[in-house]
Length: 64
Image 1 (cartoon, rainbow, N blue to C red):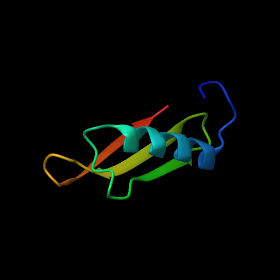
Image 2: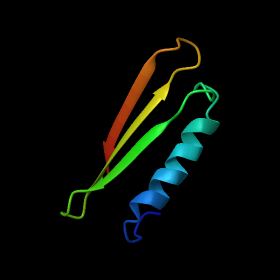
Image 3: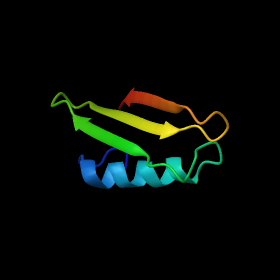
Image 4: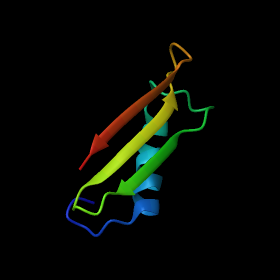
């Protein structure tokens, strides 16, 4: 998706599916993904998931 026009819903869906497929993520819990176009050519992504081993909610944020 790098170099493509930002389609937040499509990006969120792909990221959510990839996170849910990770063995370290509790797949019985919802994964929340929010992609925000900051209007400067940069997008911010926030991901919230539950760790399978600890049962604790985790977060991951990055910009691209």
